[in-house]
Image 1 (cartoon, rainbow, N blue to C red):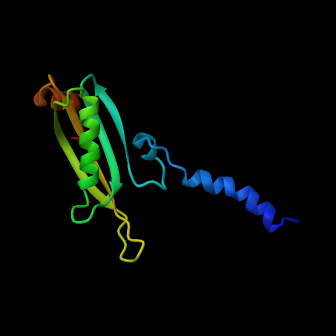
Image 2: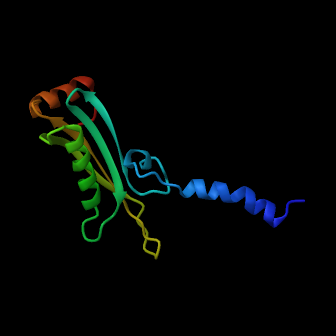
Length: 131
């Protein structure tokens, strides 16, 4: 017979693990209980496809993901000199109740200097990737 105490002891570690968060945004991207994070893919040296997601900000729902996206682009490009292109911003999950939650997503490419924007776009086209 399963007692309440036994069930509670078995379920408490699972509950704690499901709510656990790392402080690493890259890992949090895949955690359904965390609204923010990023993933990136190195297309070629100096060219990255970055996707950032985050919970909406008041007024501008994309402000938090723009900041996260640009921060990651600066980190990847070293000195911070980069150009962005093929950027798409979308949002999903809106509800009109007290649990209203809108997740914003920003996807695009960062071309680090000295790679020119034209060179980066040509590389992406040659690979048949989304533009």
